[in-house]
Amino acid sequence: MTTEDAVTAEAVGSLGGTDDARLRTLLTSLIRHLHAFARETRLTQREWETAVEFLTATGQTCTDTRQEFILLSDVLGLSMLVETINGHSDPGSTESTVLGPFHMTESPVRALGADIDLVGGGEPCVVSGVVRAADGTPLPGAVLDVWQADPQGFYDVQQLDVQPPGNGRGLFTADAEGRFWFRTCVPSAYPIPTDGPVGVLLKATGRHPYRPAHIHFIVSAEGHQPVTTHIFVAGGDYLDSDAVFAVKESLVKDFVPTDDPSLAAEFGVPNPFRHARFDLVLERS
Ligand code: BEZ
Ligand code: FE
Image (cartoon, rainbow, N blue to C red; front, side):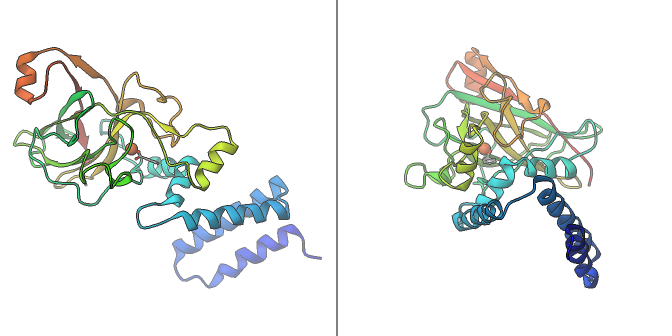
């Protein structure tokens, strides 16, 4: 009679002909952990079928503009775990966090100081900072790819009929002293998409779908490792219960209420406004 352990040993043994050593390591470990999971939970045939149906529906929900598998990885904490395993290790460098599904490869190029809020209606805000190397040297020409949801919590790509393309997005180049600044509106918390299998999973587990208010960044500079990160609005909702587990303390920033007509005029925003400061440190590559 085939024992449970014999099935595992046979499945692992079948990988002996895998030429790629890393692939063999990954698949061996995957089989061992999957089998251990089934043994530990005494997985039933019906539960196995439900899992297959769920994963099938997850795949069928994916389109060119929607990645339900990444969303599943996000809500299970796997994306954040992989991010943390591979993230930046130098203590002083800017911490990374998840990319999320709403990044576009081509954010519109904008001049320093430009407004990424093409629609208006939100609370005016300026984000400014300096990009530096680990030794404190500014990094002129650092490139900052920035994207955020509108005040209602939607990205432009989720509302192609409502928002102009590029709303909430900008590609900025830091000046000769590594400085950057841009105008926007204060972001709001928003729910991740719940109209697919991931929504079913959240509902079944009594979890809310919200992400705390944030602005995404990918920052790169010659000779340095790019960092994919966010800034979160201090004091906002859901900082302690992000649906995708992506909050890191160092990335929570004050969006300081500022009543200063001359500074507002300098930045080209109405007074009063909110001002978030985000200084970044990149690791050498
Ligand atoms: C986002 O912040 O854009 C995001 C991240 C993970 C899942 C869904 C959305
Ligand atoms: Fe986001």
